[in-house]
Image 1 (tube, rainbow, N blue to C red):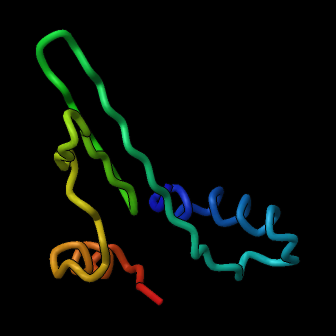
Image 2: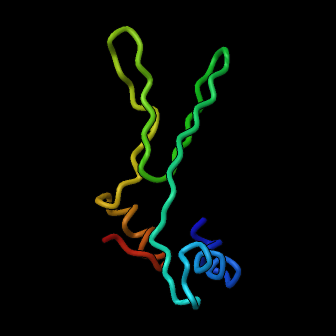
Length: 87
């Protein structure tokens, strides 16, 4: 999504959706998702953005994913390296 918004087509679409008369609008949007695949023998988990997956069984919770939070130095560096910022 972030890469799409950097293209001329993406900027034009964002401007149209926001009702702007020109292409000067900036995107402050992000995305989040969590996906879990459970097979007979394994559990696969993937997450992006501000999402979390937890497996709960027998009164015990186990993290399946790692949060992608801007207060994590690696995540903040990744965000800033892509030309974005945290407000």
